[in-house]
Amino acid sequence: MSPDDVHVRVAVGEVRLEYRGDRAFYERLVEPLVVATYARGESGPVADTSRETGDGQEADGQTRGPDAPAAREPTGPIFTPTSPARFQQFAGQVGENAATVEQRIMAFAFYLWNYEREEAFPLARIESFFRTVQEDPPPDIEGRLVDLAERKRFLEAGREAGDWRLTPKGVNYVKNRLLGAAS
Figure 1 (tube, helix red, strand yellow):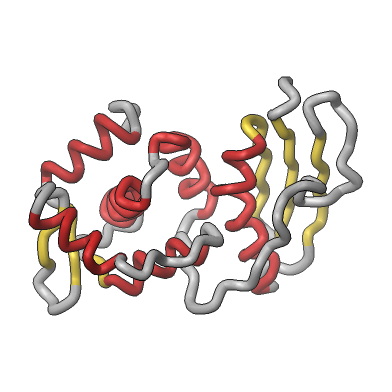
Figure 2 (cartoon, one colour; figure 1 turned 135 degrees about the vertical axis):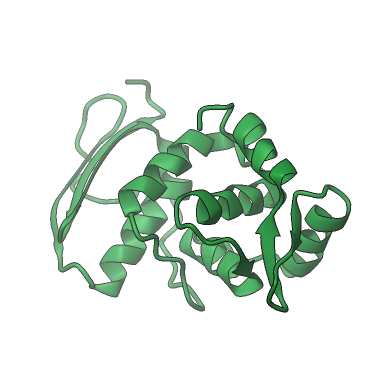
């Protein structure tokens, strides 16, 4: 394990999570889901948490490193996946490939389409995803969706007003660029 790696075991009610890997990835994508689940209290208290730093030292059961920013409460609805483990696995596959806002939008749209079986999604669904991973939705998110539709042709208008859906080109983009054809 390198100094930048982390090993985390968490149990929240029926949900069990064990993660080994890059600390920054965990803190950016996985930990917000764990914190949000625990904060909602839907599954009961955390039963077992431990964290090791790269040198094998326990981090006193904390779910954040000493230099990480404190978790903040979401300021609106958050996304709750039907299968948190599947969402975590998908986030691990996408990893650092989704570095830009547009790439995260596309990855999330693909997740909704492929795993949640949602053919179309409203802007509010994308905004809830950003809050789930403890990011503020970009103020120009609607313009970014329009750009992904009009310029890149990765999205298109859904059947209902205000809905968006993936195009075949968008599906291929996520599979080839963000997942590396792993899906």
